[in-house]
Length: 184
Image (cartoon, rainbow, N blue to C red; front, side, top):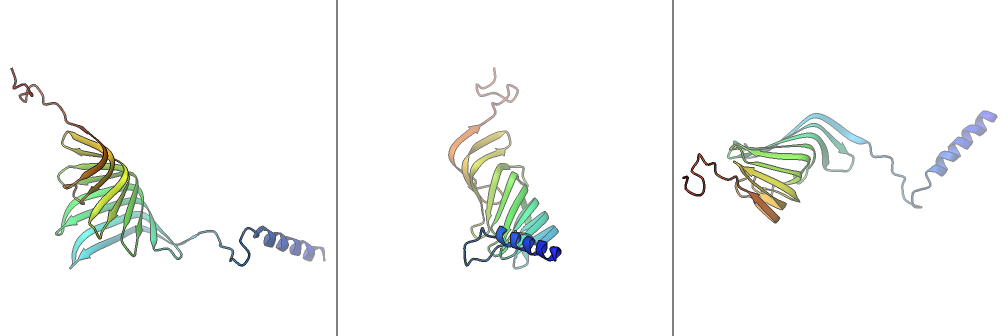
């Protein structure tokens, strides 16, 4: 009899502990992943020609959500089937319906010819074929460096626009290279 009473008391405590939900609203269980994938990979093609590829060391999807949370992100952008740039980041997210992708944490994009874009967050909009952000960015091309806030660019970093607080550094030409004063 004592055992039954203690079980009933425990069950009552469990029910009372669930009292945080609004009356008439279902109690939501903790968000456990519906699916975890290791070595995640997806590709977007047009007429069989790759436009971009995305890898994640790990991808997690939750029930009722079209997004996958990624860890260890690598994304390759193509133009007419040729690799143009590679993006890497610590984490990211892809919406599997729209293909909009977010890269976060030490985000770096490097074009095939060596241009480099760095930020803490970048967004890929496949419909507009644009990488963009409102965050701080640093763009390096050769010895030239541009920094600022807010940016839009094509995936191979050829048409880059920094929107606010733009600052630039251009290295001085060396004396051996004929300096700005014409040498002498």
